[in-house]
Length: 305
Image (cartoon, rainbow, N blue to C red; front, side):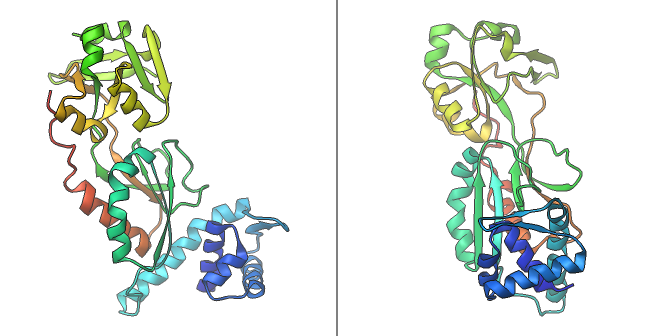
């Protein structure tokens, strides 16, 4: 199977433009279209849907895409093993991450990464909303939830401890909860949903509270907004330590029920499609994030009560 045609197919899936993908690889639009058609004849399936206005992946194309990427990665690794591989990382890396975490921790690192790999294009999708990694044709994603999809592989970046906190002004006006049973009487700020939350005390005691039973509640889907309105005294919220550790240190936020943490703290995971070989561009970015974030995560130290 022609590796260059596979590269063209993968790049077309990323850009949804055959002509643009072809130009990136040094092909004319006519040559690019011919090579895609030849690849489709070889595999015996229409991999792309074409119209005069747009290109989209067929179901067969979605199924074939991870295998095409793996074949390209295998070639790169094989050549590298023989000393013939590329010395520079190139191509396009499509990466998705929660917008709040990316703004705080990933964005400041990107200039250094791009300086190190100037031939690599980063295509970033930043959103606090979950999405389908395969369907979105992403090479890599950061998630803070348990991996359930068997078609994906995960590598841990860092712990994601979560605690209850509120502003000093809110606690002064509404009182400080002494036990989890006090929470329903307070204003609660919930992220994304109102599902019951498990609480684990330092001595192993397990408790639970449900935002649905709160006297007042607010539900939103943006972590940075949640922190801001918590700082403004809107209520008690559950926050990741990576988001609020500075505010806890300077006293603008205070821990609520400091002996408790969320019982099911998810970790921060780097997720990528399952493959026997991880592409060079994915591997170098994973290593870069772990070296600069995961190995010495500043929020991992016990918070100040």
